[in-house]
Image 1 (cartoon, rainbow, N blue to C red):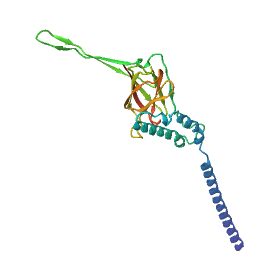
Image 2 (image 1 turned 135 degrees about the horizontal axis):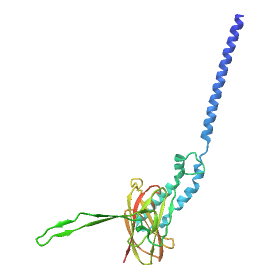
Image 3 (image 1 turned 60 degrees about the vertical axis):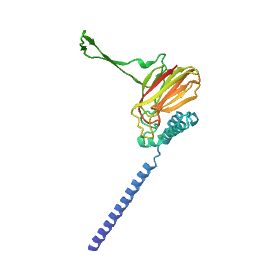
Image 4 (image 1 turned 90 degrees about the vertical axis):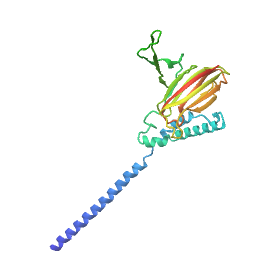
Length: 267
């Protein structure tokens, strides 16, 4: 009887070990199956970003549109190449910022295009004028007292995202989102000469591949007249009569910031 009891206990222990071993094997298999399923889940970014990349590349002009000196053409082509590289990196950006929400490339809207064509220049409306009147200063001479009153007026320009430019206008613009494009217009006659100025006023990072505001001027026919980066003034002899378009965007289509654009009509 003792022998039967020992045999029964030995069989019980063997059965328990086999059960635990089988359970361990099943657990490992389940973990590997789940891990394989997660790893095999395809990314939606390549598909969902395809149209966004196409739209972004459509905003970048061809290299043949670069004009000016040899150095200016080289800088223009380099800028266009940087813009195309940024467009093609949207898939990578999607995998980092939006890896799970299919149907959308990036969670936030990255393209904002504003076109405004008012009948009169809108940049002088909503102007904040501060008038400060200082206390009168009395100057006494040997003849008669003289009272002098000075008045200081400060005008703050409103920042806009496009519109009509008139001769003598200086406008504050804002690039508030990646891939945003601001469009300005001005009228001109063939043979007339104008100065167009563009300057960064904040936000852009010049240490990131020369990030800056960038302007491209199009003639009424659609031909490119000139393209240049911020902190520069270009003197243009207009080749056609009609409405010209000034497109302003970040040089890498990613940066954000503020800028001033000005138009001066020369006699």
